Image (tube, rainbow, N blue to C red; front, side):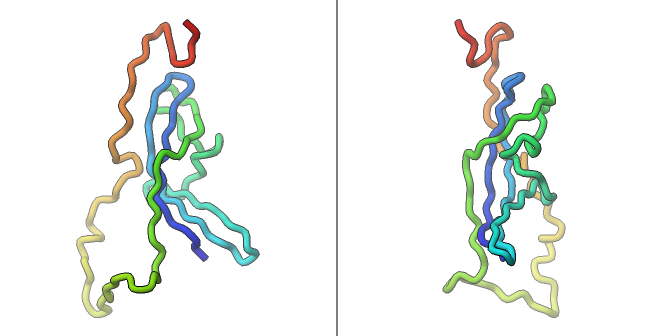
Length: 129
């Protein structure tokens, strides 16, 4: 049973070259028949490992190193069935909003990225003066 749906924006900062980027993940939490809760992550409509673990962190596009992400924003998606929520019946005998099948998919990295701060080659954040 699905217990929560959300879109989570995860930010990554590479500790190798200090490149920063962010990615939106669709996150689904569900409860199994034993009462255990699980999280599922999706990026661009494909299953993905958790970006909050070393094994699931995507590589830096500049140096290829992997760094665990941190949550910077989230938007819960309401679950269906809320009392009083507006709804529209989908007609069985005619296509309903057929353009939705042709609409381009929103990409997980398709939002504005954090500004890249130029770093002098001789100094990096955290270096001692």
